[in-house]
Length: 76
Length: 355
Image (cartoon, rainbow over all chains, first blue to last red; front, side, top):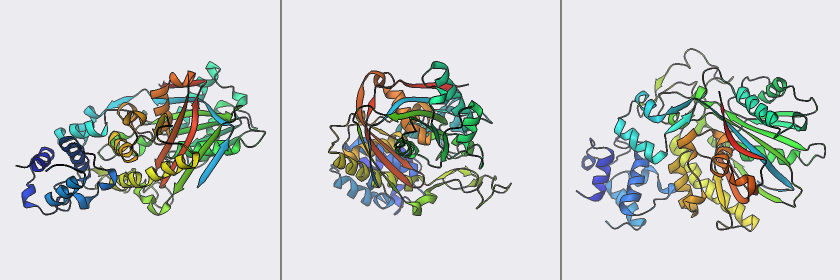
């Protein structure tokens, strides 16, 4: 299991992120989950995701989150 | 919109908070939300304690209590008050103005201006601007700026999006002429096209309160809220703050020939810890220069949050020292505003409890 999936599961243990293509629209993550997720990603990957990057488009699925992490200099 | 004010100063700050303290741990059970997730959110957002008025307590009660405290201690003389500006979104009545009620209850002189200003989280900076403008008149020596809100009375206890962060409070700020040749820079912007992002839908004349508007509705994310309650589009407000506030402050600093390093503190409105940390990161401001601890101790008290961050974090220090500070308020309207000024050598700067 990747560090990203582990971080997601820590926030919503009951959700199956591998079966979803849009975490927001399918209700796996709500707006407060995004805050918890960003806080955890900042800490776990040693980065700072800017407030203006906290938009649903960046958190649709594993691929979009990984793209954001790479943009912020995280090593995946 | 840009402003410059000369020879004006804040000479004292008093914050009044209700003695009734509530905790997030107690209130968690009101939310349809797993406890474990609530506790994580508490840590990130800074939810913990908040101050809530008891039933029936209004803005004028907090304001009268605070002004009486100043009069009793001799920190302000009743006859020196030439204007009462009262900034609130939760007035005692539609009519009359709450500032007039405060004047009447305290028996203040007739030769003065009472004015209510309907502003929210930007209300401290905007109130200061109005006070500075009035002080251009020779007949006006002292303006008392009151910021006060009892928004808990309009918030649903079953709305996790807003109730845990609400705090009731009142601040009284005395504003007068500065014998020093001081310069204060200010700016503000407004965007009414986004006004619905922070609103109380019912209770005005557009949608009067009825039994129907008092009914709790499932509004998603397991939150229950009525149309009589305050609504905040949290994502829209978060994005608004992160997008609009940094350039506002940066343009203020450029205009004043200042820099992040030359400012001692960025004393911002206190929505929650996470939002302020992200704002500081975006502006490359060290977290220690932008305090974010008001929500966890008192709750977000709208226009009172900047006076609270001043009194709570710099209470004793500002009695003896002078600091170069940037104030920034942002929220309902939508409105965002900032001000760069020297703040210090205050006559009083403290927090008291309303019982």
